Image (cartoon, rainbow, N blue to C red; front, side, top):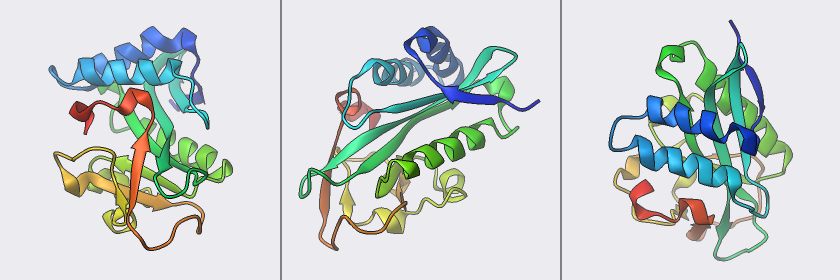
Length: 178
C-alpha cells in the first residue's frame, strides 16, 4: 500500500511526535521528537516545509526542511533536511524515500541553491547528496560525525568557492543535534 504524502499542519503535532518516539532509539527519540514538533510550530523566513506520510489515515512518517542562512550572503537560499522518521513497522517499503523525493521537489521549486543533510551517506547518497558538495559549507555546530555532512546542489549559483559558514533556525540551535 502506497503512502499519501501531504503538507503537515499543527494538528499533526502529536502524531509526528509519536513517529519519532517510535522511530529513534531511547535517549535520542525525545530530542528528535522535540525538534520535529518545534520546527512544525516555528515561524521561519523562508518557511519551513514539513510533510507527513499517511496510510489509512494514520501518520506513519514525517520529514522537515528548514532554511539555512549563509554568513556571506543573507539572500542565499539554502535548506537543511532534518529530521526524517518513519515508524518501524513501515520501514523498507519506500516511505522515507517518498518523503525525501517529495521534499526535494518542493524545495527545488522554491529556488533553493543547496539542500543539506546530516545523516547516513549510504542512505542519502541515493538522492544525490554528497560530502563533496558540502565541503565549502561550514555547518552551524561542530559535528560528532563529520562524514555525515552532505549537500545536494539544486540550482547553480549563489555562492563562490570560499568557505561559507551556515546558521540555522532556532529549533536546530542545539549542539546536541549535531
